[in-house]
Amino acid sequence: MRNVSRIFLMLLIAVVVGSAAFAQSAPPAAGSNLTIGLVMVGPYNDHGWSQANYDGIQYVLAKVPGTKLVYIDKANSADRPGTTVSQLGESLVAQGAKLVVFSSDDMTDEAIKFAQDHKDIFVVLTSGSQQWKDGKDYKPLPNMINVMGRMEYMKMVAGVAAAMTTKTGKIGFLGPLINDETRRLAASAYLGAKYAWVNYLKKDAKDLQFKVTWIGFWFNIPGVTSDPTQVADDFFNTGFDVVISGIDTTEAVAEAAKYQAQGKTVWAVPYDYAKAIDEGKGVSLGVPYFNWGPAYSAVVTSAMKGTWKSHWEWNAPDWKNINNPDTSAVGFKKGTLSKAASDGVDTFVGELGKGLNLWKGPLNTQDGKPYLKAGTVATDQQVWYLPQLLEGMQGQSVSK
Image (cartoon, rainbow, N blue to C red):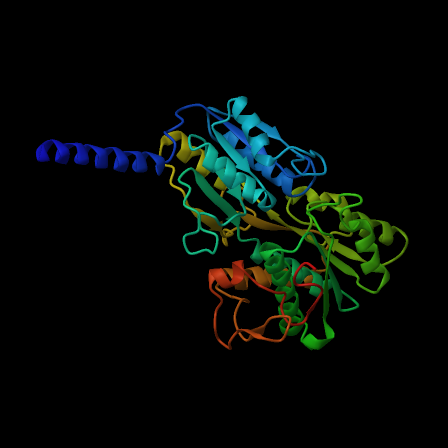
């Protein structure tokens, strides 16, 4: 009886261990054909964040044989009330999707729920950190990968372009909602602006004003958010002559073009999408943008070949050519810049490529408390989870 019991116990342990191993494994290789599902928070043609993601998947379709796309855009509570993002993901699975990209940090909770409920589906969550083992939000999901580009660099470049251009010394930042991502990107723009102001223009940092105004979401939702058109107007009407946009849509450059047509000397910097620069010809200083194609191609290929491993990636620019569509995760397209401003941007990009790091102490947070001691370089965690705006910046650091 003891031997029988021992054998039974060993079989039971084997079943439990085997089940656990199965539960913790990635989905099987998709093979030579893969339908990709894409969920976008805004319109697929918004000239911003959503369109950059849409075009990133178009890059995959062109580069990876056997792939096709099904998608849903406007996945937000205003456009699709009563429908959850995980339900939208399920509707793409019903259309044959074996890999689903949830392309906004706003979708985090629903993407996690979907991944937990659909262990046989590959899941990409863009801009999240749930698969970062050293992050604060780590959740071991073998079927999920987090993808993000190091946009902090390009926001610094935008800040340099703004500082080299402003005539009033007043730069506005049109922000979306307040979270870790948006704080660190706004702060990066400020760091770039201050660096150029002090090191290239040889001016006192105290004479540079950098103000952030948040609208409450990634784009305008009438009756819910502040109107980004009005926010841009408020900047331009109070002496701010450059507005850097951090939202998904192009109101900042549209308003700058309107004011310039009225004879006012103002500029703007759009965001997210390389061709957004075309929305404000003559007023757009340039655009920091995401290039999702290479990263999406890599994760799709891993799903098809069976080499998928859950992980978090924060992809840097290709410093040999930040605008290389096949190698650089983020870039900056120049717009209407003076020669001095253009040269400043080139010099700064060259310095970054050689190792310049503006996330280095001494730096204080907005409340005056030390954030980085003199000579201390920020860790990835300190940058990713920036708790406040930085000292020298105006605007809210947290939602009220």
